[in-house]
Image 1 (cartoon, rainbow, N blue to C red):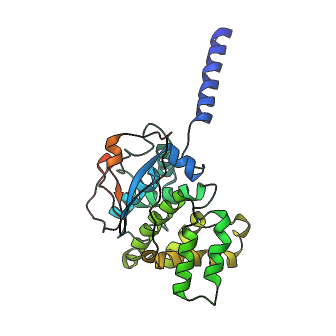
Image 2 (image 1 turned 90 degrees about the vertical axis):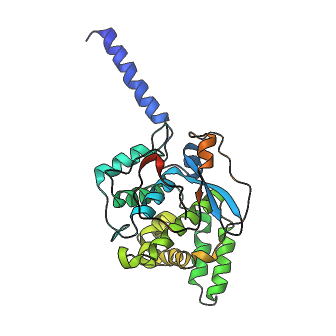
Image 3 (image 1 turned 180 degrees about the horizontal axis):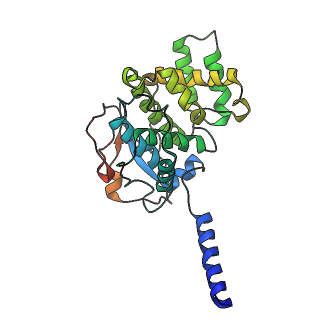
Amino acid sequence: MNHEEYNSSLKTWLRKVLNKKNKPTVFGVSLTDSLHIAHISIAYETKETIIGSIPIIVAKCGAYLKDQGLYVEGVFRKSGNARRLGELQHSFNSSPDYGKGLSWEGYTVHDAANILRRYLCYLPEPVIVNHLYDPFRNIIASDSLSTVDKTKAIQALINQLPLDNQYLLFYLLDLISLFSKYSEYTKMTSLSLASVFTPGLILNTEHVMNPTHYKLSQQVIYFLIEHQHQFHLFRSTPTRYRHQSITSNQQEKHLLRANTDPVKKKRFGVDDPVQVI
C-alpha cells in the first residue's frame, strides 16, 4: 500500500469513527433525547383518551411480552442470550426505524424482557426523577398515612413528574401489573416484579448497596403496582418531537391503546397488533 492509499484508508476509517460517535443512540441517553430519536404514539384510555409518546423499544418489547410472555415461568427473572441481546440493542439503536420493523422470530421472551430492563437501567436518570426519590419513599415509609392517603399523595407526586416520564411510568406499571395477575404461570408476584424493575424506576446510586434503602425503594414500586388502577393521567398538551427519526401520517395513526386484555396468537414484525395495555 503506497502513501496515498494509506492516507485514503486512514481518512475513511476516521470518517466512520466520527460518524459512529455522532450517530444518535437510544440507549444511555435521557428519556427526552431517546424520544426525539425514536418514539411511538400511545393512547391512554381512561374517562377520556390521552395521547402521549413512549420509546419504540418499550412499545415493541411490551407488545411482544404481552403477546407471548404471560405463561412463561420467570419471564423477567431469567437471563436472555448475551449475543441476541447485543443484536437487539444494535437494532433498537440503529436507523432508519430504530427497531420498529424488528421481527421477534429467533428471539425469546427472556431476550425481550432483558433488553427492556437494560434500556431502563441505562437511562441517566430513573423514570421517577431524582428530586422525587425521597418524597416517594417518605410516603411509603410513613406509619401515619392510611393506604388511601398514601395513594392520594403518590398521585400528587406522579403529577409532578415530567410528562414524558408520566407516560412511560403508566405504560410500565400497566405492563407489570398485568404480569402480576399471571403469577400462577410466571411464578413472579408483584413483589418479585417490583424487585426486578426497581433499578430502572427509582434509584439513588448512593443507596444501591444498602439493603435497607433498596427494600424501601422496592416497596414504592410494589405499592405502585398493587394500586396501579387507582392512579390516573390527566389531560395535558402532548409533547411534540420535531427531530423525530420516524414520522409519517400512517404511523401516527397506529396508536397503542390502554386497558384491554392481550391475546395469545403469535405475531411478528411490522404487522404487530395495535397494542393495548
